[in-house]
Image (cartoon, rainbow, N blue to C red):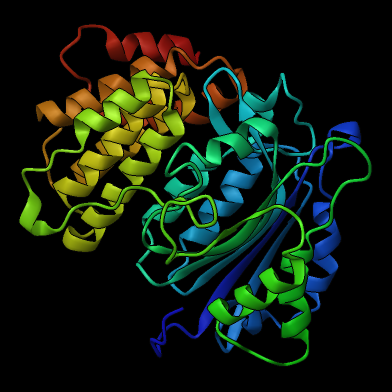
Amino acid sequence: MVNDEMDTVGTALLLAAAPAGRGRAIDAASVLPALAAVPPGALTGTPMATVVELADPLDPQTVLTRLRAAAATPGPLSVHLAGQLQLDRRQRLPHLALARSTATTLRYTGLPWHWLAAELAGRRPGTTSVVADLVADTEVWEGLGSTPGLLSLGPGVQMYGRVAPAPRRGAPTTPDYLRHFATVWRTGARPPLPDLHAAAAAQTGSAPALYLTPETGASPNGFLAAPAPPPASAADADPHPAILAAARAGRHGEAVAVAVAWEQEALRRHGPRSREAVHWMEVRADLARLAGEAARSCELWIGAAQARLDMSQAPQDPDVEGAVDRAHHQWERIADPARARALGPTLLALRRHVPGRKAGALAALERRMG
């Protein structure tokens, strides 16, 4: 965490999620009482902190809303995550399973891991930490050894954790790795995260597991980090072909992880109100389209259009018109009526400001909105 004197108030997000019933492979919520008993400032490394707790949430949009609000805070953010990773077999994307998640409904009832990465991407480097205690289904577990970047949250996030294979039968496992952090903090001790991680790994290291750290490279025993952006002395290194190839091959999580890493670098070098940062938001919007996530794509295109307008680009600018047109196009493909209704008013206001060059686009949207 940073030591900026202005960052005296932190935010801690405690998220414990797992399916209800026989699909539960980890008793994630069992660690929340121990974490809740820790002084809030110990969770964030700040004198004061706000704590947000989510226990076995039902709806991914609810989790996204809370996550987005926490990520928008200016001070240090610490995410403490216990849960169950499953692979959406259609899109080949890892998701955090929620209470209503099943193997067949995961795409709609789980939280895509890359949503977490995307929401944390815009934060100042060094202000965000994640401590995760996870179990993974067979496909995710096998993918960890073959897909670099599968669980990356970007270079600006300090991440420590344990990922263990989900038990095939018997009682759910318990998040003992994360519980060790809580136990130490409750004693009043405040060791650095690397020391806490090492101690927790030693305590829980008898069973097969992958331990995650920011420093370790891509290996079976380390954190499989997203490919880092090249230094400024390499501008001729174009990441777009590799990102597109990964997406077209169905490796959507890998593609998003690389794009998030480049977006983080653009934010660091150029700031949030820069064409470079907006470009990578647009890349993520198109990746969401390729992954079949129309609502997410629409939301990102709306954000890109609004960002360009905020940078004083005219409503008639082709880049602004293009972003609004793509947002409109994706909105028409949203399968969830409730999600379409939620995005509709924002899109309508944007379309009225940027009518575009296609005759009747605004009128068509107004008719659809009713």
